[in-house]
Image (cartoon, rainbow, N blue to C red; front, top):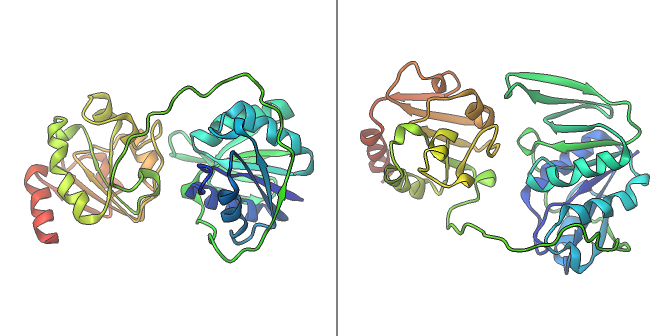
Length: 310
């Protein structure tokens, strides 16, 4: 029994979600191999070889892998799939774009967003916006699985000494082409990797009001997030959205400001280690999951917090 992990990377370095996926793969049992498909991605392959618990790195290098087009990466996975009992990828936009194609071609059912491995053929995953946990058992010859990174600790990025094997890259599928990418630039940590997050909701009232949160985020070295209501209102960009239809996060500290706590938002952040809620409504659902709650006017409380932080 051997498990293949599809590495998410930018050709130069690995994304943190890959480390969480390796932990899930180790729990499936057997050896763990990692596929690094990229262009001039030798640095990413070398970093992968250092991950504790990885026994082999498969490195496929070709120009048409440069931008991670799902059609091409999926074909590379299928080219080696016969050797594996499990194929795992992070439950990120990257993994969610690739693995359904792999599962369809293999004629197996994908198991999505697992948060626990009970045994090599049995897994747990959240359903109904995280209000229930489904235990799923698969009899498929190959288990194709996306892994919710917040459900697993990250594997150690160093200490391993896996062999790097260069494999033949599949041909360009020609089904899609990379056109352009617009990347939001920020000095703050990336939302899904941040240890501290300050999020605002509809209660902020306007886009300008979000500036009240910036000094707090700056003091804490935090990423900034938002509820779907705030995003839909146009207060902040889409990539700030935390929740079932946004980003799933589990930081050490999550500060929810002016967020009522709709089910879809709670599904995206309730696994945070410590949750602090600030809301003027003492009956707001967010207080049901908060470790610490402050009832009051956020425009008075947040500046006071900033002042206390010095």
